[in-house]
Length: 195
Image (cartoon, rainbow, N blue to C red; front, side):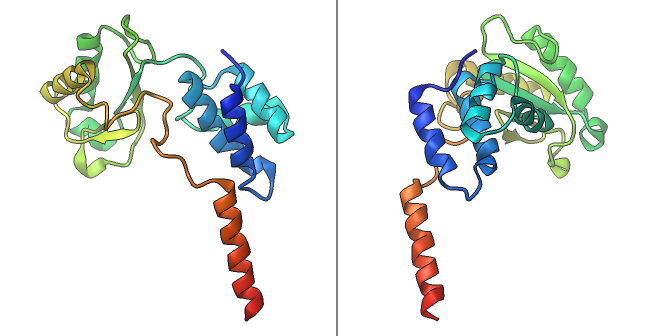
């Protein structure tokens, strides 16, 4: 879709300033791009490469390694349904099929209203609470078809807005600014030097 906006470029420079090597800011900048558009656009990856003095292929290579980065538009709510062995044994396939039928889409497809994308994913590390799913990486445990339908109804009604932000929003609150981190580093070094 697009390069980073001016506001996000300012934030990107702030993030880059937190690291001794620019390249170390790559994953946070990918999150910043995904927060902007809901996915990581090709132009955004090129822009990130320019900001970090990297080749665009390096940016794409890193982004494509992680399942959390999307390269195409997804729904406002990306629902990852685990179908690994622990979840399979207690109904994950039935849950996935129920989700497909109730939302009218196959995994990877956005619903007509733009609200939902479901994905069939590998282990999400919630084996003791199977079957499990994530909505924009916020967990739901021991999910049944009935509790899935209730979850969808709550999301549609906006009842979970404070708990589940739109896809691409990593955190509601950003980390401290560069200045505060820099001051902490200077203070820590002064303590070491005083010894």
